[in-house]
Image 1: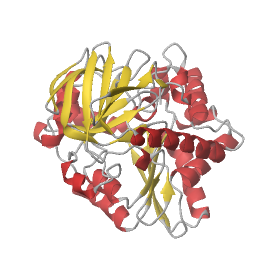
Image 2 (image 1 turned 45 degrees about the vertical axis):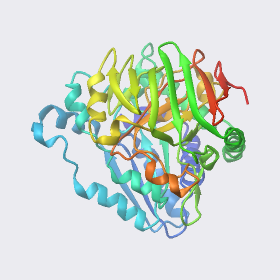
Image 3 (image 1 turned 90 degrees about the vertical axis):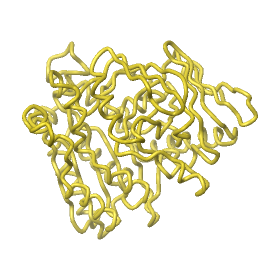
Image 4 (image 1 turned 180 degrees about the vertical axis):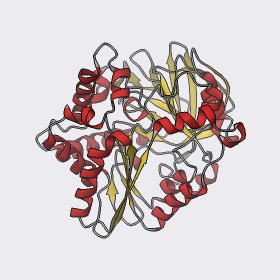
Length: 409
């Protein structure tokens, strides 16, 4: 219930969270259109965000709620040939937001992890909503100042804390969210500015190594991910800037250093180190083998078909579009928690993503035609204390980057 999920959070703290999202996250500007999207339970925070955006001079706040139960009903009951259909107006909405140089605030999870348990994973994997392909164009065009932040729901909290009753689980998860978003600091914005600078400094040191590939080795993992000649980490060191010069923070919280790999140069095998939520279906014990850049084998202890279906969406869906490094000493990593939520879990461990690549990390426009294109983007975690990450230089030398999830550079 809405009241149950918010009762664990003090009114003042929820107001500060809204202000952090509006200000540091999306950096809402006067006369700007602001889109706000989230689950039904997030209404109390959505309303605070709307008020704050209008107080900053927003022209219009467009609110869209996503009902996870309706998504489940669609997968259960819709005609088989209708599951792949995406309403065209959903994509046009995103493109229109881009034309308006709008701000976009997303509260996650739209679909509680595990909400699709018991459904046919093949059918569940075909319904990709609320994600639409136009999202990746808007991101690459840098037309929208966007940010994604967590909102605690009862279903999500009980999955993270199954040993607690509903109210205690909600309170415990809010406690974690407050901590990882640095709302327990006297000045959360200053704390984040300091952290973003730390991320940028490490990313800059990585770029100085002029790496040709990254090599992951650990239990069930021996994977080499090739990079493009101008793949860079520091170009997206924790924050981003729109084409009109608005600085924003795409992920709040964020701890990752990511870049765009060569989609034809991933080889070896990898075991995911955390469960993966694929649109509400939890994939556990994921194992993937790559050959010549393609994921040629996808196996898992549960719900492998949900990911296999996603990877069959188009030609680029089985290739990598992102590789990211995260140390284990971040606020999220130190909690040692599995959140079953990509936003938080990907900022707790190094990860790779199948599907669409981002153009921003590419320094040389000549490399842009080589980046991966797809209608999907699915991150899964491959880092842990037991996984060593090395960098392979263009001269062939292999240098340790992360050992025991600690930086070696």
